[in-house]
Length: 277
Image 1 (cartoon, rainbow, N blue to C red):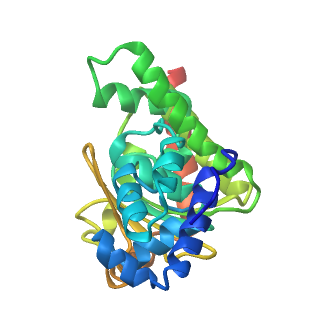
Image 2: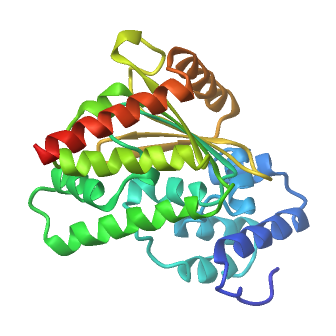
C-alpha cells in the first residue's frame, strides 16, 4: 500500500504512477481493474499515465479494490476543482498531455486558436445572462489553454475548419479580422497546420459535428466529441480508429494547407476592409 501522501506539484502524474504500482502489487491487469471499476482497460491506462483525472468516485472504488487504505481518496481530494466546465474537464486535462491534436471545427474557431475578443463573444452568446465575472473566468481559462502553443513544437496541432468558421461574423469585422490574422500568423510561423473545407466540397465525412483526436507518448489515443454543454471522451480503440478515419477523409476533402492559408488571409483582409469602411 502507498505509504505517504503525494507531492502536490504534479498530482495527476504521481497519482497515476501510484495507481500502477498498487495495481501491479495486486497482480491485476489494467483490463481486470477496469472491469471492477466498470471502465475500460484503456481508461485505467489513461489514469496511470496521468492523462485522465482519477475522480473521487473512482478513488473510493480503487481504495476498496486494491486495499490502499484511503490513499487515493486523500490525494484525489487535493486535486481541487477544475477551472473548466464539468463536461470538458477530462478533455482539457488530456489535451495538456497530448503530443498531437487533430481537430475538426464546423462552426467556430477551435478554443486553442481563439483570441480574447472572439472567445468573449462566444461565451457571451452561450450565456447571455451570466454576470461579467463568469464570462471573464471562462475567457481566462480558454486563453490559458492556448498557452500550449507557446511550446515551439509540442503538441502538433492540425485543424480542419469548415468555411462556415470563416464566414460567420462573431463580434463584428474587427474581431474576425484579428481572429483570422492570428490563425494565419501561426500557420506562417509553421506552428500549426490548418485546412479549410470549402462550401463547394458539398457533403463530407463529419457533417454530424466536431471531433477532436489526441495522441500521447505512453497512453492510448482518445477521441472527444462535444455538443452544447456536453462532452464525451472516448477511449475504445475501435471507436477512436473510426473517428480517425473520419478525420482522414476530412483532410482529403479539404483545400491544401497553402490554398487554405490563402482563403483565411483573404477573409481576414475582407473583414479588415469592412472594419475601416
